[in-house]
Every structure is written in structure tokens, then in C-alpha cells.
Length: 500
Image (cartoon, rainbow, N blue to C red):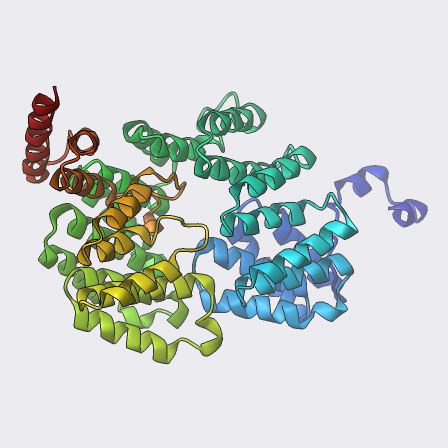
């Protein structure tokens, strides 16, 4: 700026120029492109700029990192995202100390699934600058992955204190962590802060806290309130967009037993992703199939959904790491298609590169699928082992229904009840996210099963509690589910008469 003043450029012109990002590259044009991408409000719009930047400087580590972030947020092209992380890591020696630690941390976290080494790199960043916002936020993410949500919350609060005018990631991560801790009052206070600070008072739809409201409401049991908020949000997005909102809406309708509404919402999501986002289309198909299996218990409609998906977007047309091998095999095994599930796992084992098999989400998904196959084949101890080993990471409820079913199959009723209870009572912000597949629609059937199991054991008080919760959540369910509601209601009334 001083130089531009000295050579006679006007002050107004100087002020109009956007500052360049503070990242390391030997190519000025690449830096300018990266900076333009960094300023884009939507990450997917930034991707072309980052791609052009690495085309000009193949060793531009921070641009490679940004490509990985965009792809990861889009939950697509996973192999490409990992390749970008690896290329950034290979160029780390040309970086400043902060960038080197950041690049190494991201590589250890995403590629090698070594959370301890990643945390050490972020701690090294904090030694260089105790107020480094990226290190604060990402250490919080690691603590969340490790299940230490209290520490994660503390780091997110520190991040917000230093960056009060940035909605994401600080406020977003803080609310999600407060949900997991069951700090409902704190979560609503954080949301109110976001609305007061960031919402447009002249445009009620322009409030970044709106979606967070659905997460807190749904996890507190106010599914109808969350459905209302999501419906309003969908009305604000352009036609042919908002696939994830439609998918989430379908999961909430599914949880309420409103199958017709759930099917319509999930089909709308599939229609949006069919041509543009094939990997997400398969996620939508698996979600629809789980809905059929969990709500109706019928295998034929479940398999019909998957067969339709295959005829629309061939599974093998997806990139290997974008194929949901684990979730699909898990579903097939539960639906009685054990041979297909086993073949799918064998195919995944042969096609997924050895260095990718240890990636956390792949490893957990494959273990859950192996658990379902073992359970279906009567290898109960192996099933329990697989589900237990998959029970790690941020999702504290993903493995629980399979684990409980395995305990139940071995006659360990106490353990099964304990695990089913953890499943229904543990808050999880993404319980109703479309990519969580069965978590939302499985809630009511699990409450129903808990009522039955307590009843079988003679614990009428607990049976009444869970039958009542089941009846409440499916009170307005579709007619095809009402016989189950009526049976639970009838038994609840009997128990209440018996215990006075």
C-alpha cells in the first residue's frame, strides 16, 4: 500500500483493492486466484479458483487443502479430497511454521486417521499463537471425535470470543456440541445470539441460525416444530435445490411414522441429486430403503428401492470411495440379503486401496456392515465385536441398534436394553440428517421394542414409560402403522390398570 501511494495511485483506488490471503505460494497469479476463492461466500463456488491456483503452482499446499475442504463439505469425490490432502502434505517443507503444522494436522486427521498426531500439530500452532482461531476450532473438532465434548465446547467458546463476527464454524460447532451435552438452554441462548448478530431484521428468512433451530428442536423431541421450520426453509430455496433439507424433512416425517410424507420428501431429494450428485443420490436411496425396512418390516419394498436406484444410477459408475459400500451392505444384511451383502464387502475389500481402508469413516462403516452380516449368519460374538469396534468417533449412536440386536440374539437382555436405551436417549445433532440413514426413522421402533422387552421381563413401570413414548411419537402415523400403535396403546392401558 505504501509503495502504491508513493507511485501516485489514488487513495480511493487503493482502498478498493481486496487484500490477498496470507498463504505461501511462489506464483502471484495463483495467490490472486486463491484469494478470490477464499472470499466466495459459498465454498463450492470457490472450488474453480482453487483448482486454477494449483494448476499454476502444483506445490500450493494451502490451495490443495482448500480443495479438500470443499470436497469434504460436499461429501463427494472422497478419493480426490484425500489426494489433495496428500499433495498438500508433500509440499509442507516450503511452508511457514503455522501452515506446516496446519497442513500436517489435516493430513493426519483425514488421511491417516491419527487424531493424537493431529492434535499435537494443532497444539504446536497454539504455541506459536495462543489465539490462532483455526487451531482452536480444529482441536475442538478432535475432542468431539474423541468424545470429550466438554473440552470441545471450551475451545469453541474461545474461538467465538476471538471471532464474534464469524457464524461458521464457531457458533455452528458450539450449538452441535451443546446438543450432544444436552445443554438445551445454552444451545438456545447461542442460537439467539446468532440471530441477534447475523440475521437481517428486514428479511426473516435470512437467519443462519434457522437450521440450527431444527436440530435443537428435533433432539428435544419437538419433531413437529422442526418439521415446520424445515418446511419454511424449503419454501425459500430455488426449485430443484435443497436436497439435504428435503432429506432431513423425510427423516423427521419417518420418525413420526408419516410414511407417505416421508416417501414424498425423500423422493424429492432423490430427484434433485439424481443427475447432479450421483453419490448423494445413492445416500438418498439407502435412506428411503431403511425407511421401508424399519417402519414396515417388509423386505420386498426395501429391495425394490435399491433396485430402482441401481437402474437409475449404476452403483459401479461411482468413484470407488464415493460408493457407500458399508451402509449398503449393512442394509442388505438387515433386509435378509446376506449373500449380496457379503459379496459387496468382498468387492469393497478388493477395490478400496490399502491406504484408504484405515480412514475413520470407511473403517467404521465397514465394521458395522460386517457386524450385520455376522449377526444374520448367527456369528453373534463376532457381530458384537464388530459393532463395539465401530462405536467410536463423533456419532455415538450409529452402532448401537446393531449392537443391541446382537446382545438380544444371544439372550443378553440386560445388555440389549441398556444399549437400546442409550440409542433413544443420547442426543445427537445429526440424528435426522439424511446422510445418517436409519437413525431418525429407527427411533419409534426402538421405543416400541424397549416397551416389549421391559414388559417381557415383568418391569411394568418401564414398559409403560416406553410404550407411552412410542404411542406419542407415532400417534399421527399413517394407517398402515396404526395397528402397532393400537397394540401398544392397549397394552399401556392394561399396565396402567394393573399398577393403579
